[in-house]
Length: 490
Ligand SMILES: Cc1cc2nc3c(=O)[nH]c(=O)nc-3n(C[C@H](O)[C@H](O)[C@H](O)COP(=O)(O)OP(=O)(O)OC[C@H]3O[C@@H](n4cnc5c(N)ncnc54)[C@H](O)[C@@H]3O)c2cc1C
Image (cartoon, rainbow, N blue to C red; front, side):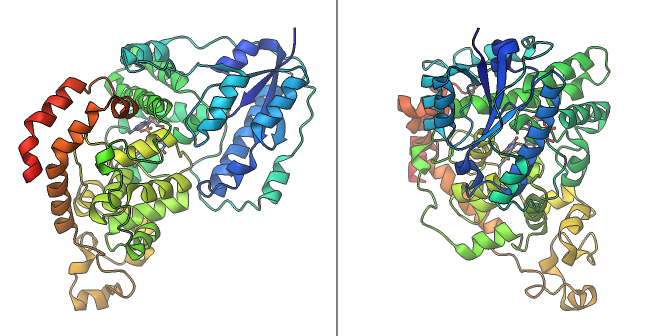
């Protein structure tokens, strides 16, 4: 039997790996550093470093089973083509959750791709019965893994240190953890041991730093599969009085699967808005000053600023802060959603094309079917950081402020400003826009566009690419389009 190259990409693990299990003992594990990825504007050095850590870990796993991973450098399709020519079969797990759809299609044509991740890949009607098939997948047993592998005789063509040197890597983020399956497993255990704190920690940025799982980068690079995490949490829930809390976690793993389906169905997800009605919304309305203020955490709204600085410094923020910063960028600063989404994608260690770009569209109103939630950064302090601890962690210039002052620093009297040393407009900015007015304007705009936005789903192509989860009924959306016609005159 011939040797089978297993091309690892976003599946940097041995267990629950369909391509690897199919290859069996003859598996020859390979990872290819694609210079186009290493040099991509939206890939941070810290994210690359995370992947290098994952590779050290997967190599350790292979060594314990008599093999190792071979590292290559160059165009993956060409390198794999050459290996095929030399007589290797090429196995890989299909995954369209990246910017290189063309490469994915080529790989699917030329090599042997497997679907072992719960995503449906038949062209027609992928969303019909999707929920039951996703649930069936995530509850099912992962494939068997051989006890050992045959020796890998393919020499590595590059070392990790050469990657660091050649690409002048300077990872600057204070990441929440090292890459790799071992660390993912530890995190999962620690998180599940602590599950009682999860529900009350999800929305608070500081509590979330401690008490959510932080599995997202590990899931992104496949150090652990969603199914592994899901099944383990379900197993724990069987004899636990924390079943409801564990369900909040397993539900989220299923949501993640829903997003992966979207990018499979819509290769343009990261490029253009799902709904054509909003395709060019704010695209030309570029205000560099506002954009820079947002990116640098200098908008004058402490919760937005602390979150943006946390994102840049650590490569992670919790869901609520991601949502708040996105709505602030799109609805309040009235900037094009994609510029904000790209900035997130660059800085997140867990940067996931499907979730990031779709969540951005949802939180910018450009899908046209989701509720408009415009998070108020003042309310978010009151609800989720009442003592200003998170803010003070990332905005040292506001450390002298009291819990009351930090909510609206711009309302401090001159005397308060002198006493605290926080002078608005000098060492901390005045609000870059008036949140209340802008939120009102955005609500009015989207209300007026509602009927048009719903009606866009008459187009089969728009409907298919939206890849909405089964709870969205097309007939009902179109019915709403007709009922709301008068709103167009609003
Ligand atoms: C604008 C925006 C951009 C986002 N971009 C990304 C991204 O690029 N990558 C990413 O993994 N998540 C993204 N999310 C979703 C969510 O914020 C993160 O998954 C979560 O904060 C990761 O932290 P955790 O692993 O501790 O989450 P936990 O609360 O411990 O959740 C466990 C896992 O469930 C999944 N999950 C949790 N929340 C969601 C969600 N809302 N949608 C889909 N899956 C979810 C993730 O895999 C996560 O690791 C984004 C959310 C928003 C609003």
